[in-house]
Length: 366
Image (tube, rainbow, N blue to C red):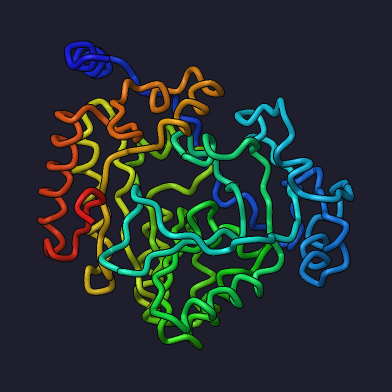
């Protein structure tokens, strides 16, 4: 699409609602009783059926139908799945992950100046349902997979740490903090990091839980990176997630208790009158959060692999954020250059009112 058509599309969006807000669901997987009806079906690889971690997970879903399978891909990768619909009614798959367990960080992700940047996935897919999430374009299924053999990831990581320091993102393909009641992986990652001085990890989240901060070990190399979006964006596109106010409350408590916190205004999503919307959000956030408790801030506008977006557009034909006329730049879809520079320039300028510039990381500058 050429620039004149882009401008026409953007101008038209200014006069119409961007979406119909669907409200929030505050961390639906957390239940005071310890029981949840979230998963009606749980698929379990036969080889891990008797694993203690599998048994502990199953005890939380006693009403679910448990189905034995040979390999998680038999369910997760089967053809003809309705990914968009599955995100509204997920099944859980419990499996073992084999092969390579650590991967070099992608170019569209921020390394925050770390030379040895990696990521890993002990869970695939997320309990939240954000329309713009790249997982919807990357995975053939909307179902959730928990790999119970986290100790194997630790073993591979120790081999890598023997060679050089590692900056590792452990929650790119899910929201581990929101799954802590089920998987318990956040605490294990924090404990492992405490014992390995050459390791620094990031746990990305939209979760608003406040009860976990007293249970997790405090470590200056375990960074909890909170994705924050204006309430208009959250209500329209981040289905099932906690409100902005709830996330800010969690950030505030985490910082007070000594946990390193990163604020992520990334991805920045185009919205009619976005300047007003984002300016108001920043005012609300920094009125409540002490910047002395913040490690740094990341920002960047929405960008996604062309192949992922192609899949997402096929499944979600009505979403404004998915169907926006992005430009393909070297295989990555982004906002048209003029709009992208305007959006990111505005956000950076506004952030500088609250945070020193050297603590603001922009994805295309890393």
